[in-house]
Length: 373
Ligand SMILES: [Zn+2]
Ligand SMILES: [Zn+2]
Figure 1 (cartoon, rainbow, N blue to C red):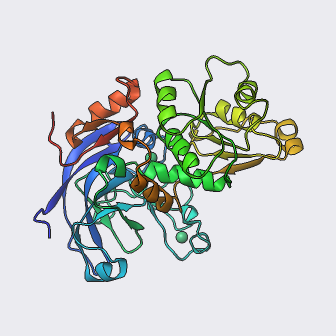
Figure 2 (figure 1 turned 135 degrees about the horizontal axis):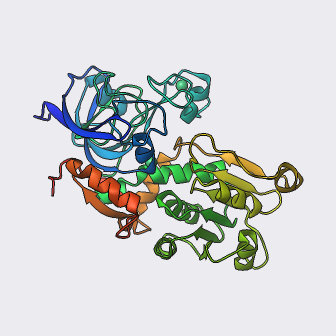
Figure 3 (figure 1 turned 90 degrees about the vertical axis):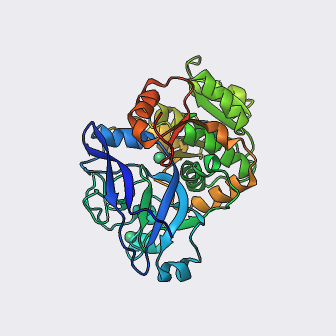
């Protein structure tokens, strides 16, 4: 058992308003788990939340890319989940209801149970749409502790896996879901647009899933260099080419790929994705563009006459299992993506680093037990 009685948290009180606060830890029910967070990734989504782009979930404790260890749990949770105090765990950001038609068909990322505060349709998400005012207020990863009720999807992580590998489980799960949506088969060529953390991890996931050739498209030279370390056979700097489909065709010896995955969440890149896939190919849209954006493709020329399957991929349902297996195999230098670490108190410094794209930042993380610098 843990001796702490309170948890420190980063709180978003409203648009642009960040503070640190403490909250009391709850007494746990039969099926509840309390997780002590070891590391939480800072995601672009968190910055969009703070900017007010994703509804009005305030006051909110952000953070959905968290890993930690079991601090305490009820007897029911211990028996049902087969976990114990001290176990390393990851908790999926989705809290599925388990009872709606979407949950029952396994697409629990589309759970239809309403969130307490949501700018999107349904679905309760840690760090995104459950306000801190909903008891016990431990619904986000930028904190020392997280509350996991019976509905939470908890995965046991290998205890020997370093936290700076484990913390990538959520974005890697997003990458695996994207490839599963794209029905990637062994030997198929894949183009990934956007060498952010999810794009780089998608390259590693595609490689591990038996892809033929893997190409990463991006704009930042440092990211493109990193792509080679995560399984890319070739890279295309989109700032130097006028016609992306042509450039991709050149790299692939005259062919277009079977699958294109767009992770950047940029409308022009989505159009490029559709135009850069072979006839009858699949395009996965895995990046959020922001509210109100429209897809700019031509209905006949780009889609109908080429029979392109456009497959949006939302969140990470079904992706944690392959992601944990892949992290455990350790085939890629995952920790190289975790470029910066901060204490909770330094969260605003972390945000400005990410916004300035300075110092080669790829993934910045918060370590709730780290002390302020
Ligand atoms: Zn994220
Ligand atoms: Zn549901």
